[in-house]
Length: 446
Image 1 (tube, rainbow, N blue to C red):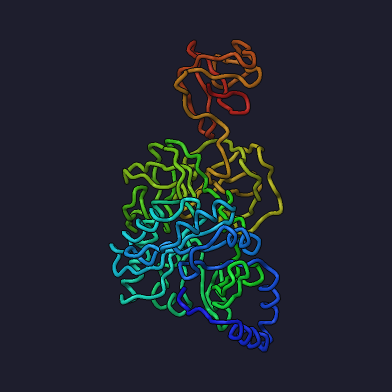
Image 2 (tube, one colour):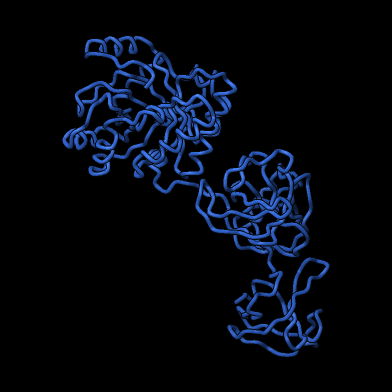
C-alpha cells in the first residue's frame, strides 16, 4: 500500500537479518514463518493465473485485494483476480485506496467501491494514507465514507493506514470501524490494532514476487479477531432484536444514525421511549428496527436497550443471572439464578436504569435478560390456551370456594379483558365474566 515494494532477494535478506538482530523481534520472525500469509494484492502484482491462485490457496489465510484508486480509477486486474479467488476458494477482502477530498466525495467513493467490489468479498477496507485536507476535514470525510458503507453492507469495515497518519488525520473517525489495520515496518504499532502490516518484502513463492504481508495472530495484535471473523463466517454477534410494541427502550449515547441515515442529535439520546412498532431487518448487528414514539423515528435494535417499566409482579429469567446485594449491581452475592426460573419482584430505578428487587438482592431489569411472567394484553384471537389444567373463578381473589369450572389443557378459553393487581400480576376475564390466571407458566396465547 503506502510503503514502496522492496526489490530483490538481497534486500529481503538484509531486512530479515536486521530484524533478527533486534532481540524483541525474534519471536515475531518465528510467528511470521509459522503462519500462512495475508498478502495485499493489487494490479502491481499483475493479472494472476489459475495456477498462481491455486498455489496461493495453500499459502494464504486470506488475501486483501485492491478494487480502486479512488472513484476515478478502477484497478485493472481486480475483476480477473477476484473471479479466480472465488473459483479456487481463496478468501479475500477488498480495499479502496482513498483519494477523496471532501465528505461528499467520500460518499461517492464509497458507493463506487461497493458497486465495483465482488460481492463474495469477506470485508471492506478504507485505505486512507494521503490527503490534502485538514485533520477536521479528513475526520468528517472518513466518517462519511464509513456511514455510507454501513448503509450498503453489514460486513466488517476495516480502517487501514500507517500509524502516524492514522493518529494525525483520522484519529476520531477511525474509531467507528470494526477493526484497525495498521502499517508500521520498523516496529510493532503502539496504537490498538487487529491486523499489522509488518513488511513490504514478504516473498510469496506462489506469485514468485515480494508482497506486503500482515499478521493477525493473538500473540501479536492488541485486539484479536479469529480467522473466522475475518472470513465473515457467521460470526456477527447480533444485539437483542426481539422487542415488541409497547415496551420501553433507552436510546444509547453512542447511537449515531436513525435507520435510513439521518444523524441522531445528542439532545434526544440517553432517554426512554416507548416502542410504537417493530420491523424485521438484518443490518449491521441488528435483526430488527424499532419505532420510537415521541421521536417518530426508526432506530436499529443495537442502539437501544429495553427495560421493564412499571410493575409486572413476577419475572422469568431468559438467561442465568447473578444476584447482587446492591442496586448498582456491583457486589455479587455469590448466588447464580438459573435460566427459566421465575421470581416475584418489584421494579426499581437506579439513575437511568431499572433493576428488579427480589428477596435477597437485585438483578437487571433488561428485557433481554428477563421476561415478565404474566401476559399483559388480550390477543387478537381473544383465545387463551391452558398449558395445564386451570380453574376459572367467580372472583379475582382465586379462592377455592369460588371455583366455577376446570378447563383442560389445550382447550381454548374465550377472553375479553386483562386486569392488573397492585403487586403487578395479571389475570384474565372470560366472556362469561369469570376470572383465571394470566401466568405464562399456566397459559399461552393463540
